[in-house]
Length: 344
Image 1 (tube, rainbow, N blue to C red):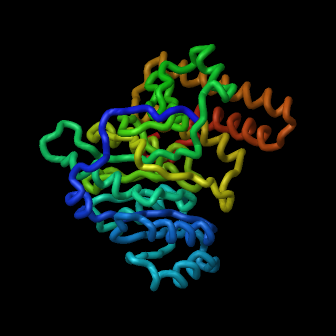
Image 2 (spheres, one colour):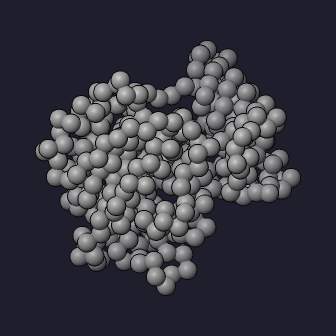
């Protein structure tokens, strides 16, 4: 693995008292993952700065009680209050419901399959403690952790080599958004580093937000229902207009990518067209001819790449992805993808 890079701000020993005084709420949406929820609660118990509360929002129907029973068995032993309730319609809607109930100064959005290093919350709280919202043109609004087990070098992945050769992207810096073609640059290409780096968008897997961001009226767009694709980029790109967002190389965590209740390749393929266009147009619109051209050029390349992969590897999943993308092309062209939405 590469030698860790140095970046801007150190998180070492600044303002520990102010950091300890910050109250942190953890909001986690979940669906049919009782084992992951149990492990998550155990992981949060090991934090050097404990959360003031954990809010679990279960998307499963009422007759499925496995996750509820896991929480009930453990709740008396937890060193923090744990609030469990049900809310359907996907992770974006679940997060909004959890955030509405959260009482903390900082709100941590945490996936149920992410495991934090013991000092994660303390490291992030220190950053907020030394960057108060008063008097700064763009105060610190959010900090996202570094998922070290997901790092990859772009030259090790064929499509990223082709992105460069064909100049499909104008920007290749991890965590940035290509404002010319509407593509978020994969933060997993960021080598290990110490300190912080400013980013354009943040994942909801392991992000900590200042409460004032939500108090200002921002919420996750209800357009992103059911299986979530790019709802985190949409939210954070809007937040970044007023708030500074940081990737912290010292706030370590791991994303386990648990399989339960997840991926439908046709649905993902469809949303990789419709959701990407929605985010691009809603955050950067009205789009110029050049932006639209570069967006569709990139999408056509991805479609052809997946078609070639489905023929070469004979994988059913790739075929489903291709079919979903073709449906997405038509849904965007016809407007069907956004019909009935307040911001088409």
